[in-house]
Every structure is written in C-alpha cells, then in structure tokens.
Length: 270
Image 1: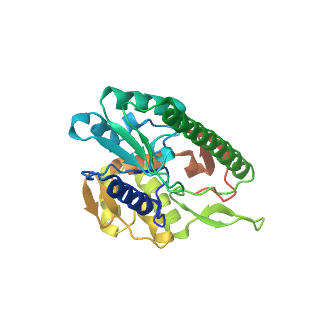
Image 2: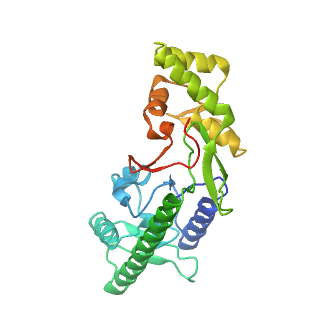
Image 3: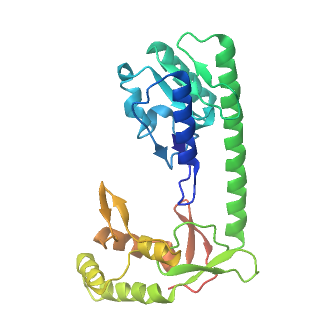
C-alpha cells in the first residue's frame, strides 16, 4: 500500500487493503505480508527507496508476487515502472495491479507480452502527468497564498495560531496568546544566561506543550504519538527543539519559504 498524504480522516489504506485481499483471494494467492508506505510520494521516491517496500524487494526469493490496488499506488513514473518490470523479470516475480474499476486485475508475469506491459506503461504515464499537474497547481496556489499573507496550512510556527484573514477569505497567522508569553520567557531566559537544557527542564516542569502538541490541541486532536518506536502521551522539550524555535526567522515575524524569509507576516512579531 502507498499513500502520499496521510490524514486522520483518510479511508484510502483500508480501501487499498480490501482491494488487495479480494484480489489475492480471487487469484488463489496467500497473502503473507503487508508493506505500507503511508505519507510517501511515488513521484519523489521509487519503490526501491520506500521504507516498507524496499526491504521486501531485496528479498525476492521469499514470495512469488506483489499486489497493489492500482498502478499509481506502485509508481507515478514511467521510468520507475520500467525499473520495476525489469526487476520482476530478473527475479521471476509477478506484479499484480488490482484496478478496481476493471473486471480483472492487470497481471504482469515475468514473461508478460508487450500488450500487458504497454498497458502498464500507459497507466504509469497518465499517473505521472497527473502528479505533475497537481504539483503545478499546488505550487501556484501556495505562491498566491504567500503573496497575500494567507496561511496555507501545516504546523504553525510556535507563538502563532491560525486566524481568519482580514479579507474574509481563508486564514492568516496571528499571535497565540498562550504561547507568545512562553516564547518571550524563553528569549528572556537565554538573555539571562540560562542554558537551553535548563530552560527545557523548566518548561517540562511547568507542563508547557511543545509546538507539535500545541498544534494538535488547537485542532482538537490528542497530543503525543509515536517516535523512535515508542508511544508518548505528549512530546518533551529538548535543547534541540528550543534552538530551532530561537533560530527561525518567524520569531521576527517573517514567513519562511524553502529555508529563506519571503514575506513579513501580517501579525505583529513576537
């Protein structure tokens, strides 16, 4: 399975899983494992680079076939598909694409004829063009948002929260009353000579939420999550997270694009 953008409300992984299970039953296959690359872009990363799938591609003797729910779940590049087909031929592995809109799955055996491969290539080309068009639209949309000082989504810089834009359309960033005071206290502590480690301990003792947890709280989501194989009720302050906050241009009210200040935020800087 693969999904570029994983959100809490998406149903795609479940639908992909159901398609794959139905197909394996139909073909008489036994499903032995699942490789789920969620939050991974097929346009930017080939199957041989993906965290969950690539280890399986390095062990082709352990199975006979790989099943995806659609060609675009496997690749969004003709070059990547060509590489995958050649890998299947070399290792005698069948590639199966369920294609829910079709009556029969698209099966590419190690000795598949040119018609099957041509059909796959056409689907990969369509997926590649679709990905390029989507990328262009998103780039244009974000350029327009930056030009008007509007907020495009994502994790808001610490000290800010989203607020209705003055134009009445969309959102902008405004000071977050709860965290602005925290940022100012951090800066004051640094000026007084306190180490970042000591400041982190002080924030932990006061129960102050880290930026990621504060963002979750503002959006009504639970704090914490999984990191380095462990589950946390909430994440902890570190010298590294403090350093990142103190060094970002957003502290002075500048919007950052590709690592460089691009626009001054409409909200007053912290």
